[in-house]
Length: 556
Image 1 (cartoon, rainbow, N blue to C red):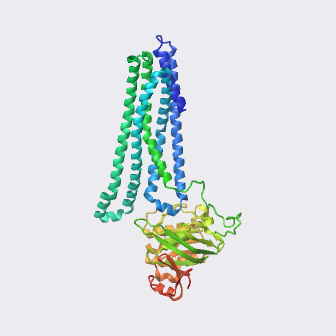
Image 2 (tube, helix red, strand yellow):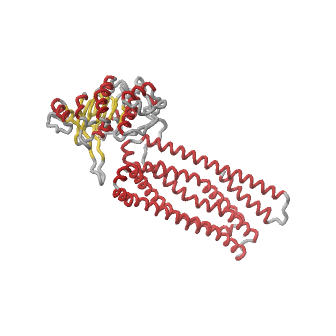
Image 3 (cartoon, one colour):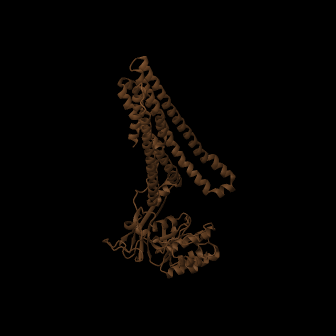
């Protein structure tokens, strides 16, 4: 349609040349014919623009969905490596840039097609004049290309500065309370990294606009220069007659606005190309429709597999066999290694994991849940099924509340269905939250509660999922002493009676007796505390193990 629109535009010029410039008499039908051509041109041009715009927005919608799906399918370590700033910038700024590229795409296509058709028409009118004007236009386009290449460079640098700027936005919002208390720190952040990235963004934006403006004005003025050249060639050198020169001028004037609009649309295309490159540079997971592990029924999970897969509701033991994981070192971070870890957990156990800060407890929790893939070793169910072979289904065994949890308003039951209201009410009573929040259907009405109460609501969401294993990372740390006692002495025994395997990362040494097993992490290594060492740990969670507990998987 763009090609047809461009050809028809040149056809209108040709009609004016033949019927209005070259003829001395104008028939009565000429005006009606001209009006009919304009109406057809209006319909086709409008249809082209509307079609491309609709296509563009559909593409952007699909791109946005695809990108979020790829993000959801990406491994946790890769997302942590990217950082929130880069991901958020791509989800917002890059998608917006692609949208603007498609919004301006009709201008570029129409201007390009019209220019090509017009030049073909000019070549047909006078080949000699066309060669001279083509050389002039080639010179014009060469200078314009140099300007646009500088524009593209600054757009790429602008995009890099934008990543840092979004990172600073997150730092200001996440640390708002601390910055409100310490104005010296607030000034340091404001005048430091934030100002550096903001100034870089400003400078590159100014330079990009500068080259864009020069390129647009250059194209505009050189089109007018081409008109002067055409008249000089026709009347000064006698290369053509006055009618041909007039048609040249009319054609070039007709080209002027679409050509300048096309040049003006190029920066949006460049920004869109940079944005798409940034999206791909994130190296997110490849897109695939659907979600792994959807609606896993225990009785049919991998029924066609040759392996006797025992997953939800059927497994009996979960073993870590020489499992290791390492955070790679960075210039400002020496890295950290966990393992080798060797332990076998039995279905229905209540297991406490203890240890000092930075000992590897949270890393162990993510390894157990399948969120971190082991660098070496393997996680095995019932000594026969490797968790890595059925990763998505393996993760379906777990529900968790991590220290940096996010609270979702929707409450889901097994297999992603809405939670039953009677179960919601029952657990709200157990969690002592019935009078604190209102639920509408399977949705929490008010999430603006204290951190301890938010953790109770996060636990509510995990309990309603009815998974085999419940993993709680420092869950009781924000609870008041009274409910902390309820949690350890009433809630955990209730879950044990229900057959739920509970893994609790905790520092609450006074409740260690409630655990079936006590595992201690120290510098990335695991030790199971038994006998006297367990009793000593129950009195002091930071007590040193003097040899009565031994690292699992190592020789005595």
